[in-house]
Length: 280
Image 1: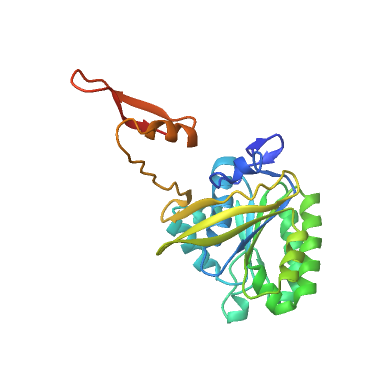
Image 2: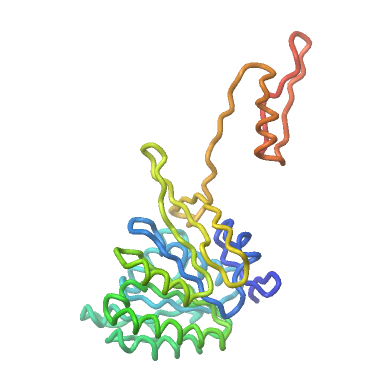
């Protein structure tokens, strides 16, 4: 039974569900747009792995960049057991890369020409009614069958998904594409989450932000995250050190930026009581 909040299904990505008002409505699509160098596959892996484990979800993975064996290794690296779900039929691959590499196809469906992707994926969607599909990678389709054909295919697949209550998760590496094309891609999905990095002196931090949602207002709030192996996506909470002389207002300042902060006070007979710790 899928975990739902007012008809919305959890993604199990920390903070993302809260920002989406509980998750994704059934039959909607989500696009993860990642700048080169920022991991996007972990988001798709985490959504279907946690949904299968917690909700008994059924799913499939369409791959055109890595073989199913490589993807299984990715899941294992993050700490999720994909093999058991494959063996039980809870999930399966739509393999469009192995045949093109001259290797035996692995999965319930195989594709030996990217132009056949729409027909085969539509059949796979019907097999997982109420489940989740991960499409990796939109950039490969754009570069192989063209922009118009790819966008038309995504629109039609989203219609099939809506009629089967399937959540579509698209992974997209944003290479040097024209802005007008990126805007067009954003328009044909229900929700877009952008993944990028920001520089903090010499340290780069990864960030995600919802830039579009058809079911809730997108705030654009930036969430720092890190990817753990094992563990997957975790919210990164920066450490803050507040210093200053006695009675300078350090505790007052901390309470102002974090209202739920609880002070730990020290009482002394020699000097003055003072705050020695804060639980935020």
